[in-house]
Length: 298
Image (cartoon, rainbow, N blue to C red; front, side):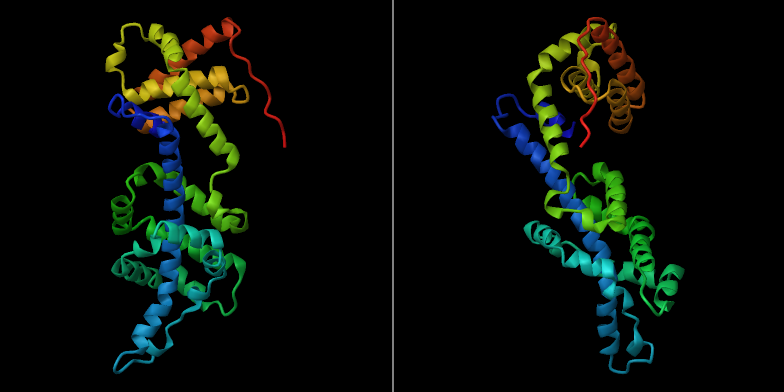
């Protein structure tokens, strides 16, 4: 959707062969970039324990507390696994993500962590256990990073499309901590999903005129030129899924584009897109143009 919108807003004649795919790949890279950086931020807060310990022990007259800073979290097994993941390191280097953290912000977030009850409980446990190691990192992400206005502003300032990615990132980070061994940082999005995205993009571009022939008669008193551009794109995408993606159930298509319309367009867009797509679907089914099949099980 974002790629199609970007194409629609480009000057006529500036769209060259390959532009659409290039824009889509850029969006996919942005998703991987943000995900990698969020995990790096969690790691940076945890690893700051070592910086804190060194700084405090180097004081001219360190106190007993300064000399005994607990650095248990810096050796967290999930952090160790993350930092030793070759794909993760490739992403950090490729996008120069190590240069992005604000050291003062990291210090503030670490300080907030050390003052929490969850952290005190974590360091009080003499032995490491998988549940505890996982829980403290989830706490850093959900209770420290996500609830920090300063960190959220940092993400918004650093990543142009953070507002679009934020919701999905929460899910991805949670999934990572549940099963880190299943993640491939060099191909965060599966080949199947990437192929689907590229095919849908190409189909909407190729079948645009035909989709509009089906959509415009359903607009009744609506002026197509005054309808939100995002609504039109979502309806075009929905019609393409009805006609050219046989393994996607029509109900799934409609529900997906209702949700996208609510999230990215006007308050009335969800109901509007629902009504138009449902109307078009009835005509297509009457004409026996919708051919759906069960998705092959792997």
